Image 1 (cartoon, rainbow, N blue to C red):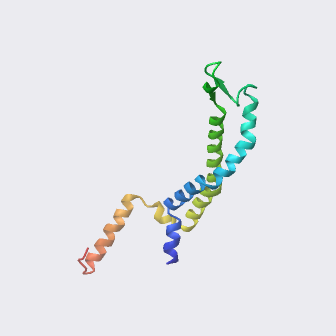
Image 2: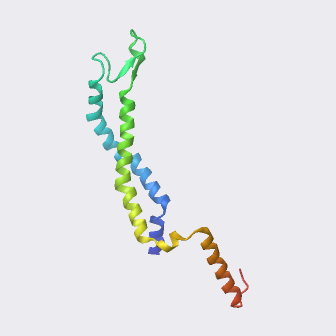
Length: 133
């Protein structure tokens, strides 16, 4: 029962799902707070005094035509920070655990080697008087 649970936890899909859930919740709040508190004010330094941060005005007399580049840069930095944190905090330890608890001989077998093993097992089974497949 515990072996099945361990195999379930070490499957790639479970790790991918855990990464997606964590990416969608916990790290987003932390990184957004970091971006709003530090990155956005730094980007606003490069904007004009009458504008709302880094960007450019399409039509000079219409404030609604201001294209804000700062939030795009902030979102890109958020993504890079979240991806780096998840890679170093979840993916690398999961890969190390998977390598530690899986049998390296099974992972190293090619498709042909597996087919040869199946063929040999079937040959042994039929030689032993069992003709069921």
